[in-house]
Length: 328
Image 1 (cartoon, rainbow, N blue to C red):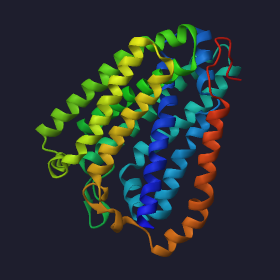
Image 2: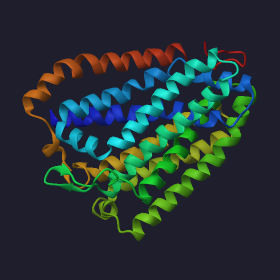
Image 3: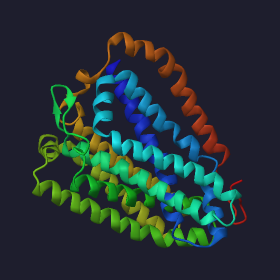
């Protein structure tokens, strides 16, 4: 049961990062154009799916709460302030998405809220991952770092990196879904964002070596980890080829594969810890009876239904949005 819920937690987290990642990325890129018709088309490219994408964040939090309650308590204690900030940004983003359609004179304000909410949400998520990779101060089975124990230069660097990564996903999604000037602009943005992501990865690698972060020892202990960067490198080459030949449908799957390789690298580097390098999976898991009880509801009903709904939604709204599309 423990391994089952670890696998489900990894799946829901990955799906959230990929699916909400691209629509947060579109939100970040939204501020790069002033043309209202282009903004309408960008909104139309994500309007059928953006709120459903956030379902995976809810599922991730629910599974963490039910299956790994002690880990949930420690993470919430550590990241209380940034998580409140992220949720506030997601709420602002959702409100702005709807209100801008009805506004005229104050539309600029809701546009700013949409861009700002997307940017803050992405930054906080990246900062959280960076703080986990660097290591949280856990003392006696509880978080002992104070309200800003998660804050540091490495965490902030990871926040910037995830903003760049989400923007790359968003640009690739716009290439796949849009036409005309929006697609052309996204094609121009993809190589710049790819360069930014690679520079970020190089800086993170140098920083981890200079600071002798404990996670780097995992690479020496587990040389097979190189398979994930190799997958990411091959995906990057395919993405560059798709850019050169302007193959619209190739860019987003390859960008998603790059994210998958990064996620796999982190997941295997952390194993068997839920909170590196303090709390293992078995230490953080709830009682066996609770895990089995959850399985009959969340495991056999909620998760399959959510997967089916998501797959059906993306199938129904497949293909491109026209230049005249309106998101309402």
